Image (cartoon, rainbow, N blue to C red):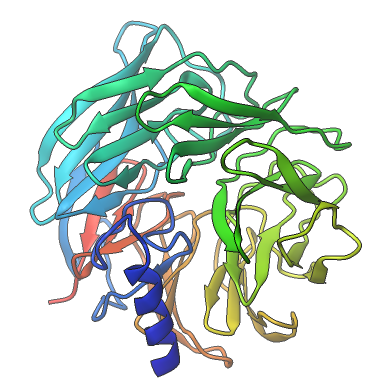
Length: 417
């Protein structure tokens, strides 16, 4: 564990996005669900009719959305979509709350639409997680548009010009490069990946994603990695994962995975390997060596795993082990270098949220809000099972000595005494 702690500290020290105590984007400061927080609670409860345990506060949220909370310098930021009473309008908003007390500091409308689009029951009009860098917040609402705000809630720019036909609504969150905000627009047809200038919101490049997959839509969040002396933007889509040049958008390489579509999990990177899932209907987890050229399907796939592979939750890399949970609730611990399975156990319920790691523990959460805390070890050890009593699809944020959990109607700060 000492070696792992050193690796985590080094990763955070090299990350310009945040201090160690912050959680500035989907999957946190290192983009992969790792937290250096210590002393987070392993047990909590907030079910109706029972005394709350280790719940510092619980506050209702306006509107609806499944974006995960981000936490920077004692403030929580998240997006929501508010349907206007008696009207067809949809107000897409960014909220800022006090992390210590839970009160709302500001609530800004970013985009207004006359009406929304039909989305999947597990999606929303505000599913992508915002991302913070320095004094700027970037809020993405998929096909509705993207905006930049300052941390006082003032809109700096917005871009509503990128049009595509979504399937099941919006989903994937953006990623940042030194110059750009990058995200995928994988709709019903003509999918593409795009980069917006962080300063102006103008399109820097837009690259068509062409594969043989019959169903074109996907929802994955890109990952920016350093492969040798080359920076690559990794973006999974239907039928293939592709790497792009962050400056030009040129496709560098791709690895195919057949008819995999509706890809949701964000990749993770370590040990010289990318770990990602191929999506619906029969997911396969792949370990791929980056840094290639052209079609690398036959040359750069190190290993595959189909049993227990997730369709929605992202993988979690902790040291030499990869932790997974399938949508059906099968949790697994896998050797990251070889794909050998150390253990595979059924947790209760269905899963969409991505797991996180902190202080020797892996935190999983199912769709009914039940959290499972498992020891980050090669042998399965369930430490706690915790009922929130509220549906949730958002992933945890870990910051300020607490877990922040977004439910269908409320936001929670979970903290031990």
